[in-house]
Figure 1 (cartoon, rainbow, N blue to C red):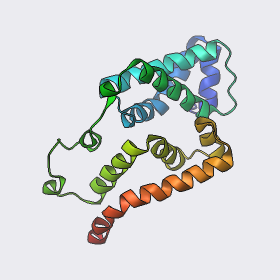
Figure 2 (figure 1 turned 90 degrees about the vertical axis):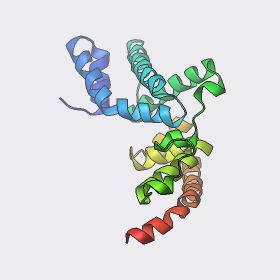
Figure 3 (figure 1 turned 30 degrees about the vertical axis):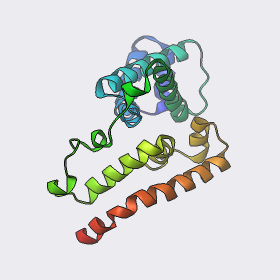
Figure 4 (figure 1 turned 135 degrees about the vertical axis):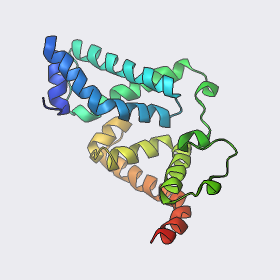
Length: 191
């Protein structure tokens, strides 16, 4: 079966056996991404799982109501964003706060250099720190680099014009470079 997002959405909207396969294919493509998205915003692993499931339920219901989808990837992500925003409104800020150590797997108070930190660990830690201060910028950079979204797709998700999105991405790249600059010593050491 094809795992193209538009094809998956068409199959989901059609119902029956194609619907089940479309959901399964789309879930295989997006579940891990959605969970990561929710975790980067501060959800616990259990909450991220629940938010992921609820996002797929929301997606199916929207298609059942006849949602028109012109940019499938951006629309799929907008469903997850909406799910996050709705959940966030229902929770207290303290319930979703995540310590920087939770982002990279270190224990609070643990000295990461004692564990033989290398370049990957440094980059992961610094990106987590950046994500904590600018979650929208971090997510936009992930959409651009990992998901290979275009500026118009990211702009649709952020509610910005393509030009404003390009500017936003440029500024986010500059900010994340500042965070990653501390990793240069590990880059030099690994050369």
